[in-house]
Image (cartoon, helix red, strand yellow):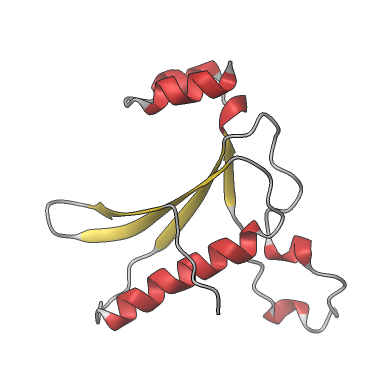
Length: 128
């Protein structure tokens, strides 16, 4: 199995000690039609790490994809988009893993203005 390393993984905390979610960020400079499979692997690894750390209960893992290209993300945003035909009787058992993509160069001015970090400058650069 290929070694996978996500770009960024941070714990989201409610207070100084209580982790309530893990947030993964994947930075893309171009369209990758296999991104749902990649994100599925990253998220699975994060859950496995929680199990190995004996976390109980597990906390959710949320991954977003930041598309920094000058083109909107292509059509594939879910595992189903990579599949051929699935038999109707099998569809209820198929998990259609979806990804969340943000096209940075196409964010509205209002959204960019709402950023409170240096990311506002980065987003404005890609928009321009």
